[in-house]
Amino acid sequence: MEIIWFVVGTVAGLAAGAGVVYWLMARSARGMVAAARSECERVRREAEQARDAAIREGESRAREIELAAKQEQIRQREALEKESEAERRQLKEMEQRLVKREDALDRKMDALGARERALEETEKRLAQRERGLADREKRLDQLIEEERQKLLQVTGLTPEAAREMLLKRVEDECRREVGAVVLRITEKAQEEAREKSRQIILQAIQRYAAEQTCDHTVSTVAIPSDEMKGRVIGREGRNIRTFEKATGVDVIIDDTPGVVVVSCFDPVRREIARQALERLVQDGRIHPARIEELVEQTTREMEEELVRIGREAVAEVNLPNIPKQIIPLLGRLGYRTSYGQNVLRHSIEVAYISQVIADELGLDGALARRCGLLHDIGKAMDHEKEGGHPQIGAEFLRRLNEPEAVVNAALAHHGDVATTTPYTAIVAAADAISASRPGARRESLERYVKRLEELESLATGFKGVRQAYAIQAGREVRVIVDARQVSDEESAKIARDIAKKIEETMQYPGEIKVTLIREVRAVEYAR
Image 1 (cartoon, rainbow, N blue to C red):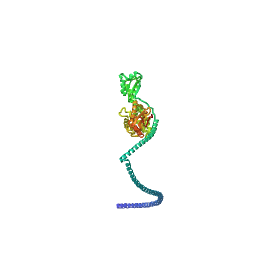
Image 2 (image 1 turned 180 degrees about the vertical axis):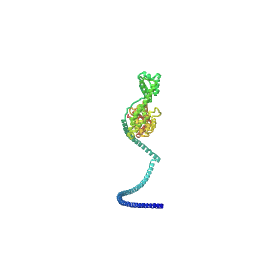
Image 3 (image 1 turned 90 degrees about the vertical axis):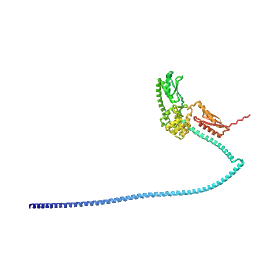
Image 4 (image 1 turned 90 degrees about the horizontal axis):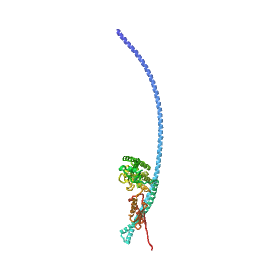
């Protein structure tokens, strides 16, 4: 029982404790609910306030956007009005231009209409004139035929014979007129060309005048004594044989006191031999080993000297772009002579004269100067290669890719080959000027006499020529013709033919004047 009551009491205590706990929890829950309600009310009020503020801000933003939209609409409307106004102005201007163009077209159409009417009237008049001319031609043909028949009846000639007689008469008249025209044109052309060429040549010569020197094919070396001559010869001639073999020259030792002659066709080798021999004489040690050593040393110095001379020539002519292979060859030309004239000085002179002539003619003066300097470059190699110096020089320049004007000037400046550029003719003229100046070259007596005889025999070979005389050292040939066989008109043609044949068949420096003389002599005796 006690256990039951203990259990009942325990249960009752637990129940009472649970009720108290429930009451406490219910009270706490009511307080929390009340607090939650008050918090919810506060949040609701804040939310309403935020909503009202958002509504007010949205309304303000809406008003601002509406105002900005209205302003943008107004701005776009103004821009559209401006564009519309500009387009209206352009359209108006285009309308005005179109109206003017229509007026101009109307005027042109009126003018064209008037011109067409005038052309129609002109065509009508021309058609009438053509019909009238056709009628006149018919009448003229009839009259000519009638006159021809009457003429044939009067003369008793056949039409073929009359035609032949008429053609012969016309041919004679044409021949006389042609001769007169040729004479007149030739005289006028000669006067103009002579005056112009004289001015150009005089200006070229005045602007460049170089001294002229005369070289020989032998050189002399001074020997102090006969004892030194013997040392040069050496025992049984071994020294002189070694010297000649090393230099390729001929050493002439005769009875002339104090002089040894060095002879060679190659001027460079001759100069090397001369310098080497002078050094041997000054040194006094003359034996084969020393000879070979000095000749080799002198050869190296000569090569340097040739380069120096070539560079000086290039600098003098002001052509800095000359290939280096040409430089020593120009130096060799400094020791080469042609008819006594130094070839390098001649080439420099031709270069300057060519430039002056080219400048006067409106051509490239620098290219003409280059052609003149290199036109005789083949003379520096003609001792080693076969052929004439024009062909040798042209082949050498072509291998160096020189301009065609330079190659053709070297190849054709003597007239052996056809010229392809005007610079070749300029170089040929400058070459003749340089070679024919007084004192520039010397010519042997036999060659001079032979050239005079060729001139006279060539002139006397023409029909009607009685005598011919070469005067002024071959610069002029006087031709006397038979006045009974040659007329005045034919005289001009014969003189021109003689000059042309001289150009084709002869080689000469400068120019040759052909003077033809025709006279009639009547001789009577009073007894």
